Length: 442
Image 1 (cartoon, rainbow, N blue to C red):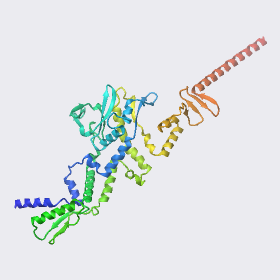
Image 2: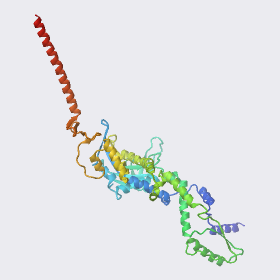
Image 3: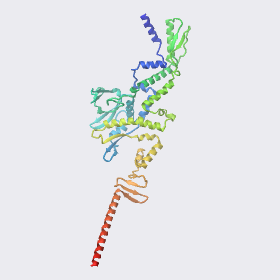
Image 4: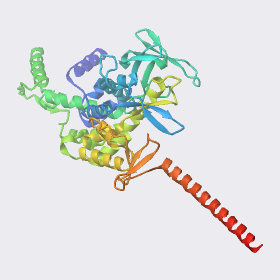
């Protein structure tokens, strides 16, 4: 009996394939619970690819500024000529430009172990920023859960942690992060299998799988011919007819895409993927015009700004010298978000200018226009000009009057001196009158 059973099992495996019913897929997913999905496989899911693309494209267009912090005056002074700013925003010194580097780092942050950029230095000067694929990154950790430490190895070379910029998502050790793929493996695996199933349906012309039942024994030659015809039918859609002789019947063992509600499943999966990445679903359908201003605001606030905050933290930790920390800081220029809407951008400039946050030349600089060379600050009254570099001088053109804090102090001092002079003069006059009255009485 054992050889017969073995032969039967072998022929069943040769002929039958796993059922494509919903129950069969759920059972398969349960039995393969330890199965993982790779980065490339996840990107084959349209919703994942779209979410990663819109996030990386948005972050890559954001420039980073370096500011000097003055704690006494609570002011920030931009340092535009620092070479590190050019490396971050224009040319990192790698084969990738700044936009491409930021896109890859954010992509690795989302769906890989983390984003790694090697900091090439000459002494204390940063020479270049070189992106490294996480596939080449090796982490050597110590065993101490409190005083954690690690080394980074690339092609056998070992590096200190401070020699790399590290953008890590949901990390527990500061060495490597946990990707979205690891956290949401189950729904992404279902999405990948759904994509494969759709691809297989297109290749086979939508033909269902099933079994052949024959009322009598078939010869080996007949079985061979039937298998070849059946293989051609299910391998592509060029031949979609197989002649069944001698009362042979075909019994379906799978459901169609309509019966399995594949379209509904894909829509549900897309919604789940958008929730995982924090991207409003309406933003993925750019041509439909369904995305509202609230959708865009939520996308920036809850999806993009946390990533920008993580980048700022990484830059301030690894790209600043120890002597610079607390005195300098890198900041993402989020004003780029308003450039897509001309009216919204100009209204923001109007509010900032009217309330003194920005001046005309600062606005022109942001719009890539030549500054006018205006050295005054326009106040809220709009008819008062304030000169901060001229002792706080103010000028009111409509009244042709000059004022200011220093002039006000001088006027007050003169008024007090004049008042004191008048008081002393009055005392002297009173004393003189008293003396004349006393002389007359004598």
